[in-house]
Amino acid sequence: MGEFVLAIDQGTTGSTVALMDSHGKLRASVNHEFPQIYPQPGWVEHRPADIWTSVGKGIRAILRKKICKPSEIACIGITNQRETALLWDRKTGEPLNNAIVWQCRRTTQFCESLRAAGHEKSVRRKSGLVLDPYFSASKYRWLLKNTPGIARALQGNRVAAGTIDSFLVWRLTGGAAHVTDVSNASRTSLMNLKSGRWDQHLLDLFEVPRNILPAIVPSSAILGHTQGVPGLPDGIPVSGVAGDQQAALFGQACFAVGDAKCTFGTGSFILMNTGSEVLHSNAGLLTTVAWQLGEKGKPVYALEGGAFVCGAAVQWLRDGLQMIKRAPDIEKLALQVADHGGVEFVPALTGLGAPHWAPDARGTITGLTRGTERGHIARATLDAMALQNADILRAMESDLGKRMRPLRVDGGAAANDLLMQIQADVLGRRLIRPQVIETTVAGACYLAGLGVGLWQSPAELKHIWQAEREFAVNMTTVARRKRQSSWNIALHRTLL
Image 1: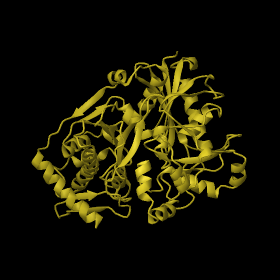
Image 2: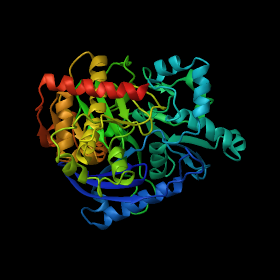
Image 3: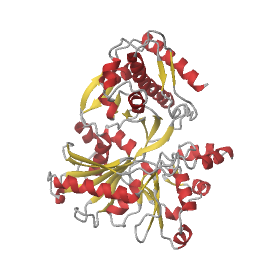
Image 4: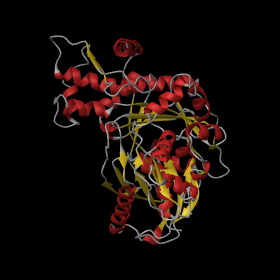
């Protein structure tokens, strides 16, 4: 067996291909972007051919680095943008339409009609998800009703449906495997969380035929072997698949109940490991499958909450208000003042996500005085990024009924030391930043390596994972409560 894992991290704006060795060291990584398509306001599409081309370019670029021979690749792991849905022809492999991206809002009216008809409770109970165009089910329905020639293709049993993981496995295996891992399936609104199977009631509700969907498989197991992929020998096992946020949770070695990670990106995504039992949230969070190791392994579940605007708030200060020239400049500007000076910024620039779910909320800046400086607004922005995450994490603790372990952080904004310290202070929990910041790639590699026996267990991976820096809590309980109270007042005004 080879000693390298090839990872494909297929994201919203580009595809990253990376190489990890058996010691868990990331040896190389390349990224290729592809076009975003906006047919109408609120609509977002990708051309599946562009996605596959970007992956192929990445594979060839990695091999050109000559870190290892293609024959030394032990396995392939995949992590992907979640919820994005597409259809393709089973016989030719050609896409039948563009993929509808997770950000797309074209099915809002249909989802609202299901909510008005009283279906949200059953959808949430079965799938763990709210009724929202974010998830895949309504996207499949739209494609089935709006793709030219779809009726004839359905009659001929030629239609294959899937999320991006399914499409990539299909292409990598030369059409031999039509599968999706359980973590991605749990983001469609079509899988029953308890059974781990497609749910007939949900399929009927969203008008999606079962026979077009992929088989649901574990996140770590041999799902197929490469066939006809340029640059790669045939027969390499594809042995690890997970949605990007679940892969990040695994890549952060969050293997115990109460372990949580926060990815600081355009928005922030927070997942907490809740163990082998389905835990439905009473605090506005989503229930999802984190991963399943092997056919005999039990699914591990997680609570998930996301803030729509995190790093995007800094981008707005840069591009909209032109307060800074580069995003990293916000840390220096915020350090010019002692604190937020009474200024509160609630960054509801695209509504509020968990635990509020207020899509019509809009951003507010309050507490301005003649003494307000640019530094106060910069500090209020960093505070807001941390405070909205603290709201989500406290909701998770409430649902779980226990204190979380130290929070593990990743994503681009996790490099901001001031933001990380603020997060530790307002949450009242220690933060840990890993050495390998590409946690989605790490998670895909770990799952794939476990699937072929390159590593024997998660316990072995815990020794591979290494912290780069820890942030201790420097704020008193009294000061934290005072800060939270000021934030809550501003949040209440935003929600009015």
